[in-house]
Image (cartoon, rainbow, N blue to C red; front, top):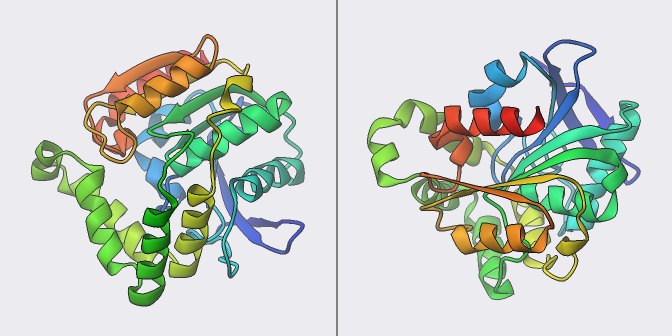
Length: 261
């Protein structure tokens, strides 16, 4: 199915899709680095019962354009605002995982009037050192996505889930392999240059933080730091690695539904 898109002020096409009943409250979903909007497939059946679910692909990912050069968290956040403006949506609930959660933090800091409730999953306000991201950018631009895709899948799921959950893992592996190398590198630059540790305390939007007890990418202390910084934030730790919405699909879906209710 061909996805509709909006075009941002700098000429980048951003793909999006609606699912669920028209007129229901809008829940906007933002995916991780290296995946596309279908990362949220495990939750769609549940969430579309109560919400008009709006998904989109980060620039550089999925069906969205992949402009050359490095991106920034500011730019990724502005993409969301331009999407909401183009779709005439004044205020939405927002759930973002990993890179999506970083975008969600930016929205909570810079555009709080547009967000009713905020879910930040498996994410962080800072992911140094920059040298590690420079090395990853160099690798993907030289060798493509194959080596990174394999390494990511191994880190994103626990060994126990990998032994039994290949049907759920296979689509994620395919998304990683299909991601545009330039787009992936552009978003790596955004993460490399991001540091919201000093500003995330400005978030006043009601916030749920979800972490994975065995997440090596954004370990529990990252989620705990967010919960401590954001006044009134709730913290939920699931028995999972990085893609908690895939590994603990039902628990993740219920937690978000209950929080938004």
